[in-house]
Amino acid sequence: MKREPSITRRLILALTSALVIFWLAAIGLGIQVMQHEFDELFDSAQQETAQRLLALVVNDRNQRLETDPPGVALLNSPASREYLTYQLRDKDKKVILRSNDASPEPFDAPLVRGFHNNDRQRIYTEATADGALFMQVADRLGNRREAVRESAVTLLLPLIVLIPASIFAIWLILGRALSPIETLRRNIATKDSGNMAAIEGHELPKEIKPIARSVNLLLARLRSALEAEREFSANSAHELRTPIAGALAQTQRLIEELSCGAARTRARQVESSLIDLGRLAEKLLQLSRAEAGIGASDKAEDLGKVLDMIVSDYERDSRTKGRVNYVPDAGSTLVRYADVDAFGIVMRNLIENALLHGDQARGATVSLDKAGTIRVVNGGPAIPQAHLSDLKKRFRRGTTSASGSGLGLAIADRIVSQMGGTLELRSPASEETSGFEAKVNLPA
Image (cartoon, rainbow, N blue to C red; front, top):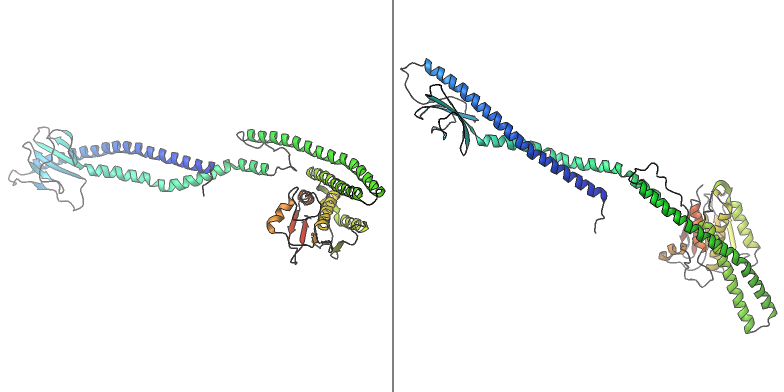
């Protein structure tokens, strides 16, 4: 799977790489400086050692008796490694005194005061005033390289801690620096057709404020477009109600005047179409009200009384009498912060949906438990789970031959969400093997 691009990841890699490169460059420069300083220190130590040893040797030779046997003297020293070795030579280039680790062969350096390098050593030569004796002190070049190498390793070791520490520090800093972007993202995510309020951008950094202003301009355009759409839908639906009702009345009167035959049958078909058109106009009017956000309310209302009234209306209607069974639990209440008209639209749509598309012999069952959960259940074959979520979309209908616009559940779901609740669709119904259930939960 291809990894999604990330600004944080890119910045961490770029900043950490730049930090490591700068650190390595600083180490390289530091190594050059240390090498120069080490050479000065080692050269100074060589020069001082040669001068002091030569002074001691001259003084010792002056005190020696002429009867002492000549020979090459060795300085008794421990078996440990000597960093500085020396040879005392006469003007004939013979070695007359040397340190324990010094080679018995003369150093490969001329008997001239000053420094001289060969393949393995740096040698300093110091001479007496009469030029009879020469003290040569040698320092292995490997010692100097080892000192520089150990210093470089000491400077490189902190990278082991610096790299993960810098990654964590950069990640932490970037997380805090980019938190306004996450805040802006969450604010944008809350925007929908029911929430088009402008985003507050006065606390955002100046780099992000242009984005907030652009989003607010877009929201303003969307508000204008949605308001125009809602106004058109509401006005159209409202204006259509009167002519549709008039046409329906004239059609029904025509049906009564016509004798049985093909003309009366066609008039019945026209009547059915006008009834469906009237229902569609009513649904469009409800949809425009739902899109306008009528569900929420800052006042608590007893919705149980509204539910009782709706069920009573269905019971008084000759077409639905006896088809709606209302079974509230004893002591159940339904006091919620919701608009009573909006709640009425929700319940009428759910009950109408159950009566139209459910088992006609069973009707619809409406229940209210003590927790305030409302269930509207109807019979009929079970609906596949893959199709349940589609039923909440506009103009989506299940496999039914009943008339309808496919807007009832979409309107109910929209209004319930505005109330802060949820509309859950189940098939088969709870504790049953078939049927359909619409479950409404509204926050207390």
